[in-house]
Image (tube, rainbow, N blue to C red; front, side):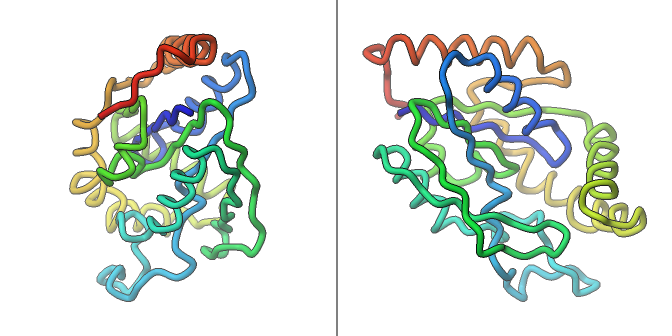
Length: 209
């Protein structure tokens, strides 16, 4: 079992990059999204000056459940991953079964944040995209897909997204085996080729220390 962790800021294209890899891999592989593991209710100390929840802080996620699920997958067990409603900002009762395929793609803004989770990863990647591009992508997504107003997206960006990226997210770049720029097609193809190689040659596996 190999876990490939893909990290990057909001709007960096993690989901798109993950999908590109998945399409070029010869076998069915599972994907785990960190966004699914937002806490059902954020603690009060994760509030902004205006009293709004800070969803861009590492403590906004259910690391206990996530760690358990990654370990279960690593041990060949299926999991029931949570689902999250971004329009209501709440965890749903519905779960999604994730199977322990030979390779798991794990993507999220803090997928390289905790050392214990990095130790479970066999390959790590960081998507480095300029801030203005990430902001525009996030703006379109939140307005069109999550029913947010333009003003609320802009306010959240300056209040939490930008400072949390600088403080917590960008430093994760140092833990990546490789950094990917804005043009992801070639990088996705290279990583997919590596995944296919791993799937074809399980005896060559070397656990990351």
